[in-house]
Image (cartoon, rainbow, N blue to C red; front, side):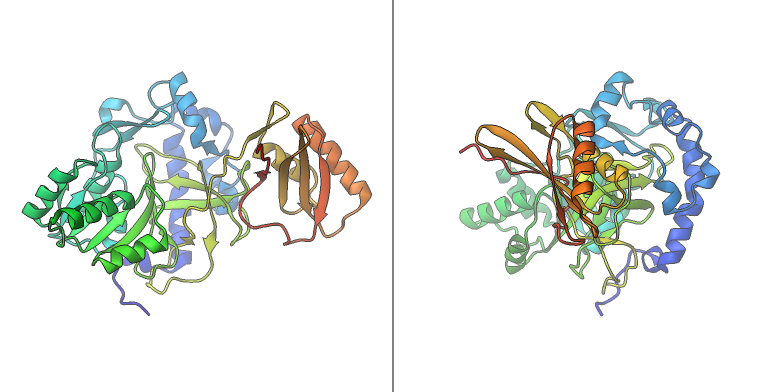
Length: 412
């Protein structure tokens, strides 16, 4: 058992207590959300008082992050999903898309302090924050959480390594926030130029892949680095702990893992798309689908925290592809599955034969037959407006990687 080192008692609650607390509060959140016109329209006819379980939550429509730029453009600035006006927030940002994000004028509005604490950040630490403070919220996500912990923050932003070295040698920060790539640039540059950045002993990294090899390199150079999964719209979703077994889901949010192209939760352990509901009354998100794939890890973490754990980023769920000039989307594959409940996991494989695109739908079933294959092929053609072959696999045989559409075409 690792040494217990927790931000507060919420992290070690009985999981049933946490679940009851979240879903007892959910109806009030929904009542607040429907004060915004877009949610009022999307949730029309739904009784918030009845949404008190994961099963009930799964009946609500999914809001796809990929849709936000168009929705916001049609109803500037927030697409009608925010109950308040821009002037009621503390800061106003934009991120690529563009997607417009407001920051509530409260302490630790992005819920990052908990993840920073898990990475070893403590009151009185000096933190070098190299995420951007310009227009996008990345810098402020880390800054607000570090200051909520009582840390002093150097708002360095990215780039300009020579000035970064000067700041580090003057202020002697013990902690780093930024991408893992930039931390390596700093370490390599300091080694090559004879600069002293040895004060940095711990780091929380995000925004780029963080392979185990890079984690081990940082450790060999005296820095224990942990990763966080965060987005510009939601803030901290999950973070690594000293157990280094997956990422711990943050408190005060609901995370679901759903089959790509649907809002249907997958069985525990299956790879699916991350869907998040937040409890921010100023800017609520109800079932925001992020387009990223992950899976829930079974069992409890040896760090003592009791919340859900996820495996981290495992790819993208947005797998739409063009076949013979027409888009085929995960939602269409999911519709085939809905019309044939005897099928399990589905995987549409797109290949080339000669100069022609070819679709083959692989489907798990315990009762394959020529008749079922013909029926499924007819459904596929009806839904996708394209013909495709159907092949069957035994339950559990298809890869558990979250891929609904596998584009295997090669044009060499």
